[in-house]
Amino acid sequence: MIRELQLFAQYTCLERHVLLTWIDEGVVEPQRDEDGFLFDPADEARVALACDLHYRMGLDHASLPVILSLIDQLHEVRHHLRVITRAVAEQPDEIRDHITRRVAGTDPST
Image (cartoon, rainbow, N blue to C red; front, top):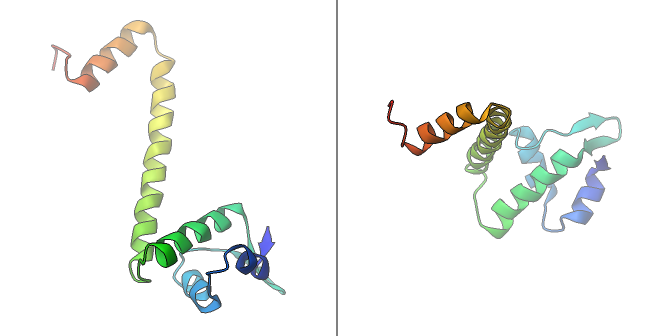
């Protein structure tokens, strides 16, 4: 975990008022103690992405939560797809072949 000052040293384009806005809007949700905010590796990654979207790509503050929400949804779908893929891989050949044909649209039973 890193402190707010370490985060600013790592992301020199990041302005304090922008970070506080992101925290207020739930874009990033660091822990807080008596010395300030603490950012875990997931928070750092989210700040890095938000900095890229806002400072490098010019995305405005109002759009950022929407875009990040969509990215979060994509990550969740990818996770579910990996789980399904592993479950299919554990099935007997006949079942895997049937699923493959269904997905490809070549199953004559559909």
